[in-house]
Length: 74
Image (cartoon, rainbow, N blue to C red; front, side, top):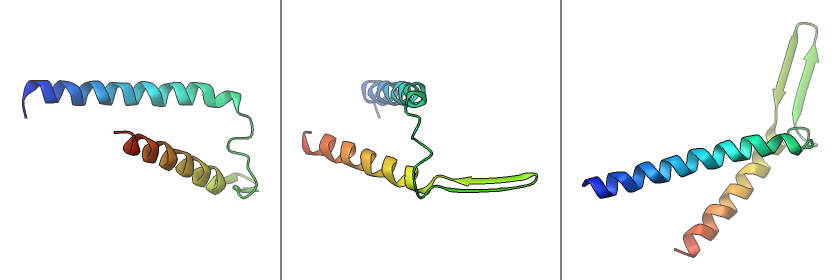
């Protein structure tokens, strides 16, 4: 692998990390995210179990659509 290809990989990784940071920063403004119907939450004394299955499926579908569109336009 030459230096130019390595540089492109590092730049892509950096842009990906910035994108994740922006999404996490903006996600606070979506109060329904993590509280959708189908998200599992079990509360007992001294124990809380939370599994956001519906939110995970929704995020997976959105990311799949984004990556599909990116691959189509390449």
